[in-house]
Image (cartoon, rainbow, N blue to C red; front, side):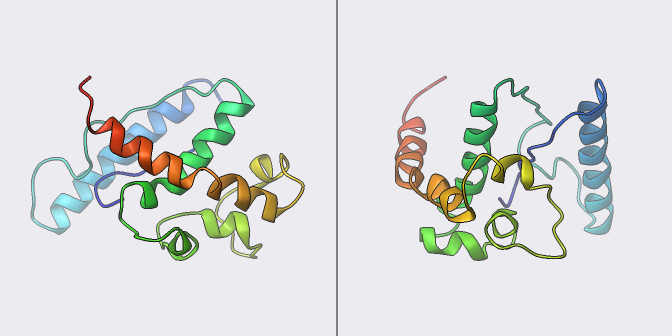
Length: 139
């Protein structure tokens, strides 16, 4: 995403994620603005956090994040998802020595990486349509 990012993280200590990510976002914005001689927000909107309670929610949010470049038309084809450089999807689909993400929490819910891939891709068109419909409503 050119103007925001999504992270799906698991909290280990109370209130640790909220303060850490808020601090990271603010620090990066200051660094970016200094480096590029700019002012103002770097990312769309303010830092936001949502608590995920169930495992089902966790899986669906994971899918939403991985489909977001397609849903938002940053990439045109679902086939481009695997090569989108700002996504961790490749780490989930192709084992590597240099993984940044802890993928086991998600992948343990599926029989295989192919099943996980199908879980992601099966809802791609629906999510894209939902995104388009959502833009037609007022909140």
